Image (tube, rainbow, N blue to C red; front, top):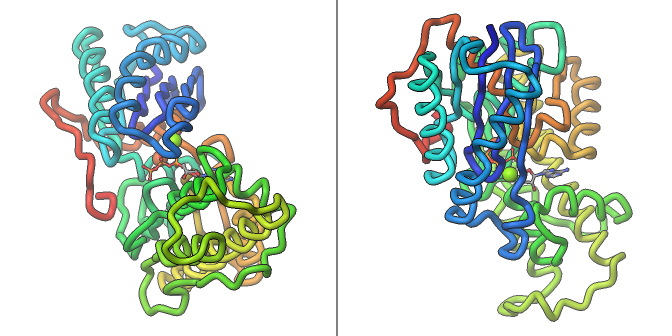
Length: 340
Ligand code: ATP
Ligand code: MG
Ligand code: FE
């Protein structure tokens, strides 16, 4: 029997029905971009309210697509950490309610483990053990992955996540929200060497990242110190493209350098990469170049499984196989340090 998986950690409301060999029988993702665009970022209260309106129709759509009823399910799985508190609560309460109504076991998922598991869904060979890299809106981290559920934190951002930096640069240039796709589209016609933006911590001993200095450097390259008002910005499309291309090059340079270093450090032969920024074309191709050069196997999550979705909740099967079910009094864990 398949499982129902529910995802509501940030601003995507998603559900999927997945069978025990990770085959997707039905799925639905409701994005909220149009609700948050005006604010140039996700507003937690708006996200929670939108999840509440969408969660049942989204679950219905996935179940109808799969042509299953509650009685046909093996378990109900839900991402309960990390994420926005109000958003997580909607998913967890929905999952608990359905688990009680349908008398099915509840399984809780770490959303970051799921982002990496999206890579396993892309290929037939087993991807674990490996080094795992998550580059998303809220995280930029490297892990040694002994299995899909046994991860050791190697390092991560000490300030902004890479996706957050994309979103903030997009906001400065009035490119809309979410910023990653808009910045990368414009970057394609720009010169990546136009601005010499910093590659913070690139030569550091550890595996930490920092993107807030890069964000500030972008800011000073377009408005000058002390100037607050980006609405008066008078940049041509070509100038904006140069900023985007140079910014993207700096982010990608740091990410690829540190990922390759983690592979050497762990003496691993495979890198898996998930999270929204892994949809970025320049990042994907430079990772592939590094993999070819250094001789490691590279698996990047398919573009549609990089941003939040419930299909990657298929990782719940790994917990079911271990007999790791959750009790009905389990609570959300919004702000996990290092994602655990
Ligand atoms: P987390 O998983 O850390 O809780 P999240 O779920 O909000 O955060 P994701 O949905 O994985 O993050 O990714 C969203 C982020 O990915 C946004 O910051 C967005 O700008 C970025 N992103 C999406 N597509 C691209 C792209 N093509 N290039 C760069 N960044 C991108
Ligand atoms: Mg999102
Ligand atoms: Fe995410």
